[in-house]
Structures are given as C-alpha cells and as structure tokens.
Image (cartoon, rainbow, N blue to C red; front, top):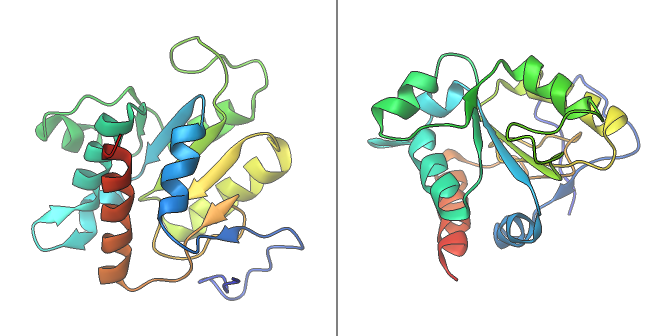
Length: 179
C-alpha cells in the first residue's frame, strides 16, 4: 500500500515509509521492541474526539506498554494534570539530536532506543525530524502515529480521517492491553 505525503510540495526520495495495512502492526512492533520511546508533542492536547484527547490515549499506551514518554513543548504540565509523570521534558529537536548520537545511553542510562514513536508534532517539523533520523540513525525504527502519512518514518499511517485515526489509536491501545 502506498500513500502520498500530506505536504505535497515535499519530495521524500526513493526510500519511503511503509504504510500500516492494519493498526495491529504497531502493536507487534512495540511488543517486539527492546527499548521503545514515545515522543509526544503539543498537538496531542488539541486533537481528539469529544472530551478525550490524543494525550489521554498516549498515557494509556505508555502505561500499558511501559514505554517512557518524552513530553515536548509545553505539554509536560498536561501530562501531570492527568496524573501521569513523563520520563522527561525535552524539546523535540533535543531528543532528535540525542537519538542521532551513537554515544547516548538513553534517558535511563541503559542504552540506545531501537524504536521511537512520534505523535502530536507539527507535520512539517516531524517531516524534517524523521528525515534526519532516517539518514543519520539507520538502525533506529521510527513510527509516525500521526494522522497524516510521514514518508521519512520507517512506518506510518496513510492520510486518515480524524474519526478513523482515533479508532486506529484505540485498536493499538487495546492490542497492547491484551496479553
């Protein structure tokens, strides 16, 4: 399955993200990762359906899969308001630089991460971040959990409607909750 970048003027190059045929693929990738990391940007507070926001889904995901969370921008306080303590606050550019550093031992000093999941970061910024990780950290798998296709990720959703995107996030969380 292929998808077109949501930001049409950008050309991703010959190596493009695989599009998830089913959201359960994310479940498998997270469960098989040795050291996953979830990076959540400020748009996770603004997006969602009804009262529940994407940040609420990410809290459930992090708790269920025991994934450390890097809160970017100003959303650290939003996590704390919801009773969840992220592993750290860090700008998205800082965590990107650290993920590119082969000497970095991770937030806990236990080694590099093998999977980085991104959500809630502005599309154009995530595009550049994933491009740099694709070229500088080729051993790191990246998943864009955002609503729009990110061709520089290892894997990404295609361009989804808001309602279907939220359904996919729920499928992922439910899959991670199942033992």
